[in-house]
Image 1 (cartoon, rainbow, N blue to C red):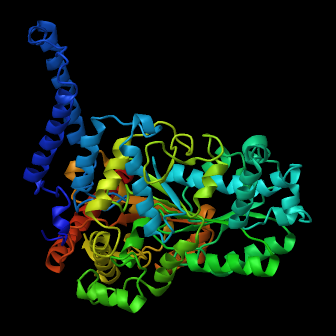
Image 2: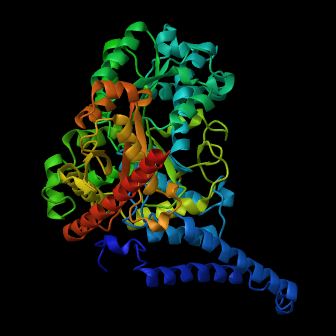
Image 3: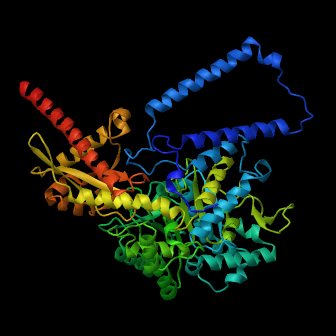
Length: 637
């Protein structure tokens, strides 16, 4: 049997093209579960008799069940967002993998709860395996790393801060304990608060040997809380997801300890300003609790220079003897690292990678991807302490499926509530493999084992390398490149004598394409923002007319409050003056994650683009008509 993968065979399709196979497998999943029930102790008599099944109240209950499901289906079909359609270019959603949908349905009927192994003996193992898959994709040593499924990137980010906080306070706890203080004898508080993560974990190994790990751990932030002003600062890019603010609140660190890192014109962390802030803190003696690097910003899809962050940390360790925790928020872009790996999980040389892309038509001639600094960033991810990634984004797996991967699994002992050592040999594990007690070792409690099955199944069918996810993700990247280039070179659209020009915010690092329309000759930024906001309203669920519009997208506003003065660069490129920028202080952007797999054909894409221009013209015509109508009303008044 051929192992060559056909991307079109992975999805149900915009028109349910693969419905025959999908229905067959869905029926198989249900049949298998019913056989399982029937065959479990076949000597047991049925407990629902045919007589009972023919009673009026029994039949009535079934009819009411059917009616409720009919009502639910009607509501879902009327108002749900059609993520599966190429007409939807908005949030980070697209069609989902059939294998994940089927695995989820198959597993949910068994109702496993991955909080405890005894409630989910199969899916707990699947979750551990899926976590190992992700650790391997990020370049971690799977024998030393640890990963698991979360409800989403928000919880994964919480866990990143959680472990960073507990690691940071552990040396202080060691210095307080009579039976451990000799391990850090002669070290100042400043040195204790700036210790390298690996060194801290090495110390915990010694505490375990001495049998005092729990006692010392109780003296850390886990036991005594966060002492004001002790942990230092948490450096997060201005492009951050709001979950970071929530994390500082929930974990008792305080939002005032966040230092925002400015971004550059490509909405990546500004490397020079990052270095300047970091060295200033080092000179002042202010500890750095952690630094976040974003791989796939929520609003622009930008990829921070992770390699520069790792270089900076090494410099700080060598020059100041001070280190800090590094977490990568790759909720959006994490799965893209699969595009850089060969079938043996090796991170490919840049030239060999590009050659492979061309050879297999993953990234064709004329599309420059990855940019060299993006390549370097993905390579350096293997050096980070922990990474957030969302299978329910670019893993093309249904909600809710986030994940977190940690480079050193010993770190879990600092947050576990299982006892001291959560990585234990299970009684029935003949190979001596170590398992983790999930519920007591993560932030969440009860969690669907079906999600773990969905992620696990996806990874088995679509390998986390260039020959698997490389082909799937590559389709969106190519389409986004074509889309951005069309926007950058499009002729103005003419509506009732008025001319409107569309241009992208920048060329994407990944497949998020941001753009705006501007009426030529109108240099009011306020008018520009109102125009694009109205376009969004007519091209989104906000219109309440999802099925009457031919194009659906999302939007955002790049403001001074969030981004500083960087958005003014784009505003000026569109012809708006400094005075206009100072008066408005934000630019309203249309935002499209081009994740669809079905436009990766130049003829098909060009037809799509031609149709899209007609859609844009229709929308602009509707807006112009609205303005004319309002003008007449005002004139009459």
